[in-house]
Length: 640
Image (cartoon, rainbow, N blue to C red; front, side, top):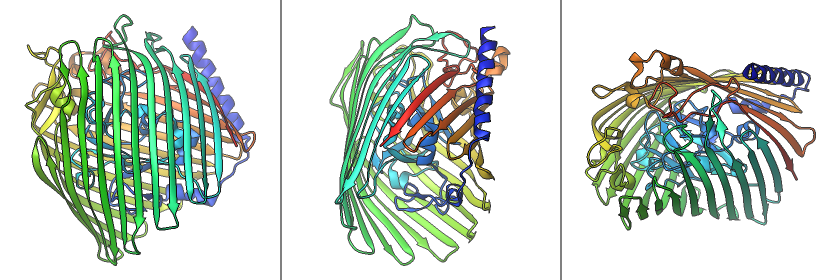
């Protein structure tokens, strides 16, 4: 009865919101078409600025407008609506050594960038070499997020097999100053406060943001209590100087500290793990326009991931640091990008009950060059080569070739061939629980084809397909052994992945717009196991969205359909069938009574769906890491 009443209240709330929206004053401007005509400028596909529509790659952008209207809790939540990106959290807060699993096109080998600079913390076991995206939770400092869903090893290194995520921070026009205060409350004892201030004067610019966030235990779709507490502080400091129009220098420093409690092996309350995190990131970048044809980008970064968990991983302390220097030369029909990259991963301390590792280092130095040759206004050919020298696995060359064709200003098609070389991370080799020092580097090829198209002034889309084949792919094998009772990382003889994605965006008029996305993934199974890494990832995903904008109201409705999550025991578990295919719906409403005040509400998992993103068990037993059930957020923003 309580569940029925709660659902009735939720439906009533939605009706009231919709009624308010209908009577709002519609404000629809022609410049909104830019968001849907794919002419957003991007830099990730080629390491140079170009239009998204003309980039010969499967790339998608989360814009500042979407960030402001959707009120994403963190980068991880923002990525969930991107076809081809799969996020798997163990719990709600995204903490813990085994959380934040991230895949693009079925590959966990993904490079994460902040302002184009490497942000991966490659010693971390649970993040599979990526940074913990849930920790970038103060979205006020983020201008946009570019997601390259394509192998990019030539430009970004061996671990860009699946793709690249580039988080671009905000800048401000000279002479402007902006500040914002945000307070949020909600389900599960949620309490959050954000502050941001940015300004620019006489060429100097700065951006400061701070966040305090607390959450408590949550309930899943069946009302079961899940132990999951978080008390986190997130700060960002960015300062820069523009030297006329020819040079720029900036420094960015980010810190994240948290105390948390999570379940260790399922929803069962007695099995809990308290822990702490103390992470930081520093980067400095110098950009210079040498002349009309030549630009230089020089950068240095240092990332540190320090955490402690009782009983499970007692202490983990990793550092990744490096530098890069890139030259971009444009002359007529050619754009040549070349440079050097160097980074080093170090285990400062890795300690648990059974082992203690420290001082281990792995470094990688590389040279890359890419030539984008524009034959004419229809044809473009891009070729590149990266030469890596890895301290443990030696040298490897990874070429790439992409042919682009634009028969008109409404169609851009491409076909690409790329090779990749992926060395194991430090944690894959030296983790006391799962490590395997005998792992071999993964090598393979990727074929991809795609097309961006404009149907009319209100409808745009893209279609992409890929085929990836590799030898010695790395995967986690849960089979216990005498030396690894919880399993270990192993090399798979071969892995064959296939996939396709489709996106459509439509302006419906009167302030309404809609979008739909579809993604298909098939990874050939090993003997005796299920496809898609033994059921770790679903076969298909649909993303549906509806948005309404007016002078006072913004309303957003987003749905995610997971299809065919074929877990390893699927054939004999009748009950589990209902958990293989499911919808999850979220909604956000913004109300702006004045230009400086915005009041917003968010409902996650509107229909209280019971599901999990991680468990290999089909049935919701005590090994499930259940996702949160229906929950609410209410916030207010004041800008000045």
